Length: 202
View 1: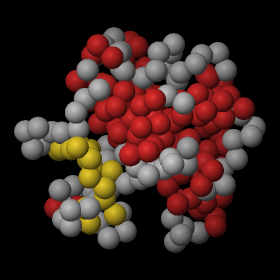
View 2 (view 1 turned 45 degrees about the vertical axis):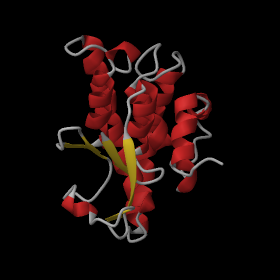
View 3 (view 1 turned 90 degrees about the horizontal axis):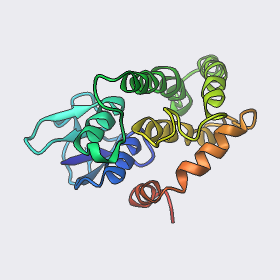
């Protein structure tokens, strides 16, 4: 497999998942500004959507969208228990969290990285995050990981998205559970390795 990524982008979540799963995978960096890969290919010829992540499978087919890619990875290494078994209520709850992260958190961080976004749009995004983050903090008050007592691919995605807060002035001080969670997940060896691989950790 090959993972197309951009350092610190949402592609960090499948990068972490691959390392947690112990699956062999090549990685190739994408410049999201120029849409060129490190090997000099127009990334849009690989993924017409133009954004990361994209996971190229061994048969040449492509999977996109972080919330889907991480579940595919989990299902390739069921012994690692990075996702609950398909068809179980626990799996649907994990899927609900992945969808929540994608639509309620990830989507609202987007304008904060966009220099062309208006101040009004950015204020709205911050207000939306302030409404959604307390729910995550409430859950993490009583359990170590987002979807229960085991680390899962939902944590790969949540950690990635929450880690953006310091880059776009989204203060998490009101929810100490979130800061503690970030520190806890960041200490995992696979997370440390992914951060090093992407040049985000010395």
